Length: 199
Length: 428
Image (cartoon, rainbow over all chains, first blue to last red; front, side, top):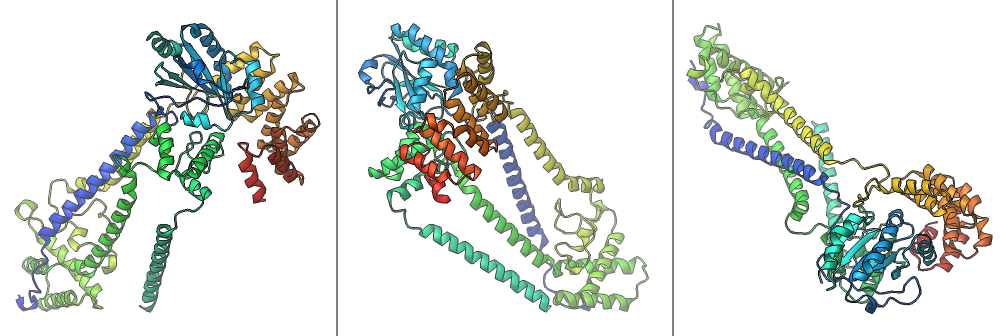
């Protein structure tokens, strides 16, 4: 043997601590990747179960924004006429099919529950006065005040996403529920009647 | 060598250029002066708010009437001296933080803010790690350590492989020389010798349990593969390329390790697919793609069709049905329904305007012009007619379009579509 050939070129590269570090690093990376993958799966599972376009109003259980503006009938809306009543504020437009679909129900709700202290108020959003008046004469909605809101300023102040939307305001002026889409008799029974009975 | 150097210089130059451009962009973005003027300040707020109707768009870029209303509110509030935070507060009080396009800097919102820098940092770290590993593992890692070479030679000498002493001495001298000068031109030979030494050591080693495995970094899941093609293959030691048996069923383990990454990727994809299938609810035909109407039951379209069938002489029923088909994207059906409404009510403007709109969107603007032009005689000052006709003429390439749109703007200067028409006229 010729040991002289091996000059003992320095200490052998210490592999043990580096190996440990490498293994730790590998586990850390694996954990991070697995965690991210799990997070994505959870986000998908949770995110697709709900409809992102349906958002609850930030105004629930808060004081209702003021109602003001000209009515489709001509004179300005007078808040005094609805004071102390349970309000059903319906935001609609003549170009909206679902608004047309719910109009018959809105009229009958005003007829039947008006004497019990319910008052409907319409906000005609992003519409022309001519088209809205045609809607009123053809479809209904003449039993209660209709505020014109061509530039949607009033609707935005109520936090509206689209038409139709209906807000239930109790006698203290607090928004209790918001309905997105055409009203149903079931919704009226479920939400309007209890607030109306609470005197 | 000079070609390599030139390539490297080019790469460095390209990187430096990219870094300089990125720095310039960041400096410009950071140093941009705060917007001056009411319109500019309002625009800065508008771009940060979400349109309630077209939810992928900002208020600034949405064409919806509600976004137009919001823009007017923002301009009015900025003009009244309210700060951007106050204006945004007006909208968050009504729509919640949902209305802000920037996610909130708290709770889970931090994830969105921190993920990009974290991704960038981990990417740079990964590149640095790879470069370091390549540099370290390149020439030096190919040659087995002294102790291993010595053991290999010992084993070879004692197991009667028929090696001459001076051959072994020359080979070991070469190994040592290359180890001391990694840039040596004899690298390839040394690599071959190292390979042979490792093979000899493996052959001479008694079964696993009696002899601990050599100290080698454990191969990662992606590290398995064919033998390195040469010394420049880098990144792996010799014995790793030919791992000695160290545990029962090493082949199965290796196979499992090789499959681990594809298996994990497939599992992830499967989990996502299951989540998608389980989470996405089919929409009833005719429902508007943005939002399911609460309690609309069979869908508004079916109800409207039933209504129209019950009142076939009522133009408004056909109009509503056409609007619903239009909303659902069925232009052909909408065209039929609008035509029915127009036929039932020869004097009405609305169904004809809607017909014109369908024709424009359906790609027949010339037909829309033919339909709408005769109506000017009976409705000379009707802004929607002027607007629809102007847009149809514009789409058809009619030279009268600009004049028609200007007439519309005179009659309805503050209408919801006025700003867009102005932009259209200016863009010409």
